[in-house]
Length: 252
Image 1 (spheres, rainbow, N blue to C red):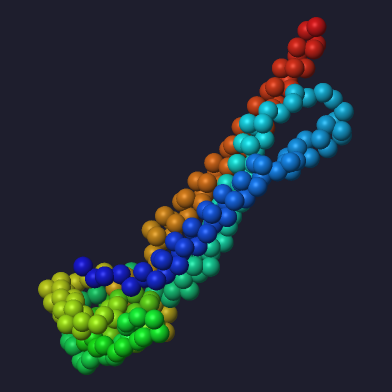
Image 2: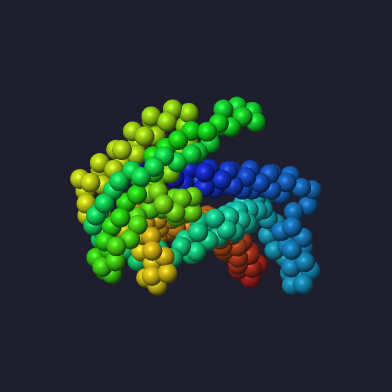
């Protein structure tokens, strides 16, 4: 198993989602305990314009409307966060075509320097072996250098994988050697390449593929759908209540 390189991006994404949830809860709290809700103002205007008697809204209906609006607002904010993080990275990636790659060579070329945090304002240097992997892409027949994902490609244009820098360099050395042995045993692997052939490197995995994008969009989509359904159900209940009242007046 090759460790993931996107822990930093995921931590930023999770922190942003936590901020959204906290903001949404505070927003709903302010709405629930305000002296005069926005919906009540709209209701009064509607009563004055139509000039007819309607059933008084229950406090639970007001809160349900505000809950639906809060869910929709939170979903919009989550879409915005996803748009500037996952969706942007997915759209900017040029490695979109999937193919089968055959490993031709996997060798350790040199030791690379990295820095790790040893305390407050303390940084020290450690070393990790640079593993270079060359593969041939079946769809194009080209011999290309293999990188783990987009982050590895941006961090190092020569090494297949950049581990998290640690004080103990032997741990990183063992990790790289295990990856090398795994690639030598499993020579046929799935890879992603640039169909325009502007980039010579190919990727073993994409940082955000279609499965990750669809899964990240699932929850805000469910939330915005649930908020809309709450509002529709409350409005339908109010309509049926007014209809029953009018029918009752006609029968009298």
